[in-house]
Image (cartoon, rainbow, N blue to C red; front, side, top):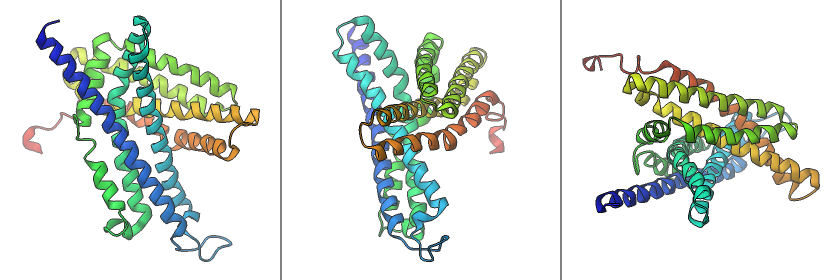
Length: 313
């Protein structure tokens, strides 16, 4: 390998490490925003609920909705990031070249998801943190607004999330005609089977539908890109969000299955296990349902994206 090519290898290796690190930053700031929002919600008295005339705001269903959204998105992002980093460990430790190559393919396809999806949700989580705090969250006293500012730079660092989407569809999907992506999605089918075996039929069905949506979207992008590069580019962000939501959801469902198995055996902390199950179910109902929209946006292609003349803006 020539010096120039070797330099490119080192450069992309360094960039990918940085992208994974930025994704993990998104997880970290999301977790801090969530912890602070929970603490505030348990302390702030406002309004009333049946049986409690002076209730703390954590008793209000809409506040619970926001906290559960913060919690499930953060746990999904953490699981997605850890999945990629676990595969990276295998790449460095395995002596079998074929097995190492399998894990490298998985790191390659997951890296834009970790960087892109984890930092996109960090903006949502930290914004919800401000909302939970109400007007107090918008000022400096609580620090909630600082979390939101910290999160806002992350989709820009180390290649904007638009670039991450292009990396996913233009390099990771296109270079092997979607083989690595399909390999990942096929592997996740085992989680569908495990969920059904654990009587989690509803969330198993949802994951199965999301996996099918990812495959359909990938086929659309690859077919359309061969005819018009704008199709690939215009679909990149929604493809990234579709796959990121699906893989993160799969990891939460996997944790729910593990929690059920521990409860069945009478092992571990039952309360902790039950929280994992509820969080996974919430993610399926309130977050994975977004995949319908992501798929429809991919199907729409680039016609309206590129529809206006430049002078029309």
